[in-house]
Length: 470
Image 1 (cartoon, rainbow, N blue to C red):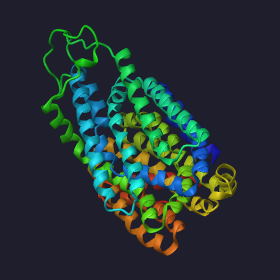
Image 2: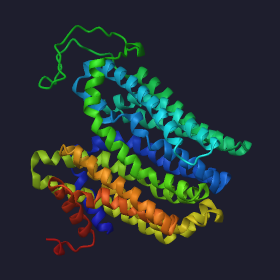
Image 3: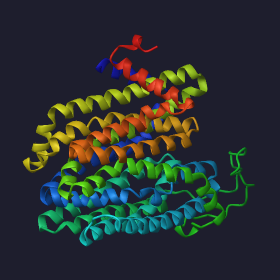
Image 4: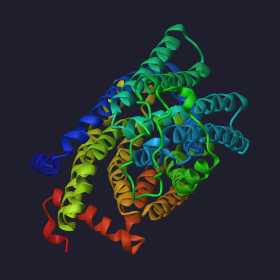
């Protein structure tokens, strides 16, 4: 398996543009590695300090807000990057309009969260904690400047900003523990991270963004965003140059609305399990379950970094030939499977030592949950990789349908399996629904079955049984 991993990585990195892609995402990788270790360290300390019940309340609150996260993001992330690249002259209008839309989306999110809370069994205290975390979504609106950095291949500033936000919230959490503050303060720590990131996004944008030069022709002369060149009017960058355009807002929302619904589906099938555990069992159960989730999801930075670094090189192979494209795609999925399978098998066998060592015997019930839940890592890795394939093939609408199927499956499976088997039932439901959404869901449509075939071939190749797949 190690030889197979080395060979897959070698084939992918042989592309001439790989170093450029990897250097850009290296800063993001650094941020995510730090987030993994520091976040896990502080998260463990917080879990020990709060205990299963209060830790469960905090995670329920974050999951509940995350359920409506698509309203805050509005599916604009990639669209903002694309539009700035296509029409750099309209940077201020694109960013200004996007910022207003994101702020409005954050308000809609808070209203949706407040309304949905009334349908739950949450106490008044729990509702306050949820709304504190929801309020922090206003500061997340300033992520629009991060998308500018992405459009300029300046991921360094995104990584630095994320690191400062993580450090601020980590220092806050540790201070709260040492002082002995109650649960509600830890909800405030979430806002501290988001506020810190907003400040640094604005700072780096003002410091590094170049003035718009409209005196030369836009090189993108064959797309609908092109406008006749005009005289340079921005000799100096100023945050006040940001402006809102109704026409631009409608154009952005026209492109993003399918992504809003797919975002809701993603959030639903990734967060609904913790919410249902709280509603069908109790807060303490959420605390045990959250430990398994954290120990499984802490590795997700790997798949995001690999996908951001390697998929562009994989996609560029399509320009040369379909055979080369599918060969690299197979190697890409193979790499994701090998890494995720290795993580899952190690955690499965050492789950007892990991849970007891990190979280103490108070979280002993998390062990059985982790041994099941960790296998969802494989399907999460494959899903992150296949999402980029769907975009490359312009099949986002089919990806959204696939996610909705997974979300519905997650809800139904959780409802019955939690009632029948408790927390292990919830973990089983999550693994099955992830498998449906990221792997078997590719069989639904004729145009996506090729993705199922490539994923399957990649998995079988890992175990050297390619001859059995015809």
